[in-house]
Amino acid sequence: MKPLFIGGERVTTSSAVENVNPSDISDVIDTYAQAGVAETQTAIQAARAAFEGWAFSTPQERHDVLKTTGDEIIARKDELGTLLSREEGKILSEGIAEVTRAGQIFHFFAGEALRQTGEIVASVRPGIGVEITREPIGVVGVITPWNFPVAIPAWKIAPALCFGNTVVFKPAELVPGSAWELTDILHRAGLPEGVLNLVMGPGSVVGQTMLDDPRIDAITFTGSQATGARVAQACVTHMRKMQLEMGGKNPLVVLDDADLDVAIEAALNGAFYSTGQRCTASSRLIVTQEIHGRFVDGLSQRMRGLKVGHALAADTQIGPVVDATQLAQDLEYIDIACRQGGSLRGGNSSMTHETQGFFLEPALITETVPEMRINTEEVFGPIASVIRVRDYEEALHVANDSTYGLSAGICTTNLKYASDFKRKAEAGMVMVNLPTAGVDYHVPFGGRKASSYGPREQGSHAREFFTTVKTAYTAP
Ligand code: ADP
Image 1: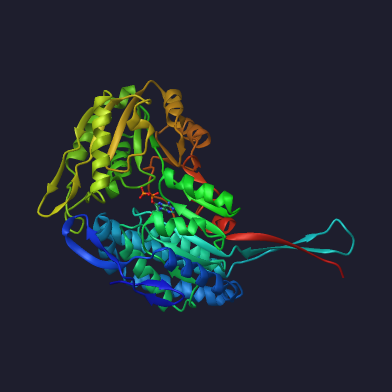
Image 2: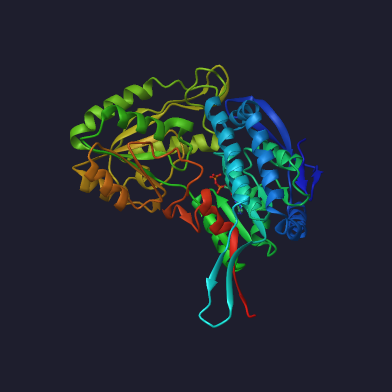
């Protein structure tokens, strides 16, 4: 049994859950200890007790822990990438790329630890000095989803530690393996006891205990809108800072003047890679009428060529869906879309390839209109819909006609439309001639409307959430 980490101790529990490979349900990766209310509260207490020491540690000390962590993650990228793909189901090259990304994030924040500055401002009163500095917030609760088992924990935990906060980390139930390895690496990299605590277990118990505990000063969360709303309400009750990332219904606009190959590649990657299980996935393909036929035919042909299978098999391009519940939800959305008038290409599901897993062929649903549920609700699978529009103006309107606003893309060779879209797309991230998914790690990540709440994640903008500002006045 892989234990919890509380106050620097490895803690086993009476119950443990199995981590099952979605590519092969007979493959149990390991069993993992499960925290209850008591363990979670002890972890919060440990983080509280460790806060003062870590908050006043030197930038060099924080740099060294983060740098050593990044080094080990990158050195073990093949092994950790294999574990990630085995527990989550994205293909091995994507698993290794995600692990590499996590290492790079730790390296970025190792540098950031050495770049902490303040401001000296002239007072409006004679003889008085004014300094503006940033300080850690305190104990940060980190609650993460299953679709990026190591990159999302990395981009929350690295800045939290960089700026002197202590952490209670609750990973998603389906992917404890990557979370456990990351925590183990950080401990061996020299993190003092209690600075990072790992509590694996159900959201309704461990997560909820974190939300209800006034000793947690801030919560950074990525997950569903429904859980995000609960997190928000709890944070308001406790007057604590929050940062919420809650998915998207990301549009990819394809205009008549687009380079067809570029558009098909962007749609194929954005909609189906990582089994479509990315909050930045291109789920609404908004296509103008002249290019519509060629685009749909070309994309369908490429889609049919994608090899679905075991995430670790060398020739697989699309791994399984993460579990049975998610597969049932994906199939239900395909069904709803067809019943509401959509026309389906692909989308066959089968539990039996060489192994038993949750396999689903990419699905493209054409002839859809914006009001259909497939175009308004996040699905989170290898499923994209096509909406045919008259011209750029209608495409822009449809793209923005969503409660979400995470990422938005456009494929065009016309500078006027590209510039206009960059300005008017109601999204936190805009992509021109690129998939809506796939971002850099040193620049802000986040969205608008129901997609995100609170300051941006990643890059130097992460400081906004993970620190609080102090203004000090000194009279001579
Ligand atoms: P997903 O659909 O991606 O699983 P969820 O919002 O259900 O999204 O889960 C995201 C994270 O939130 C997971 O770590 C989950 O355990 C956690 N979670 C679920 N319910 C709660 C809750 N009531 N309080 C706090 N965290 C929760």
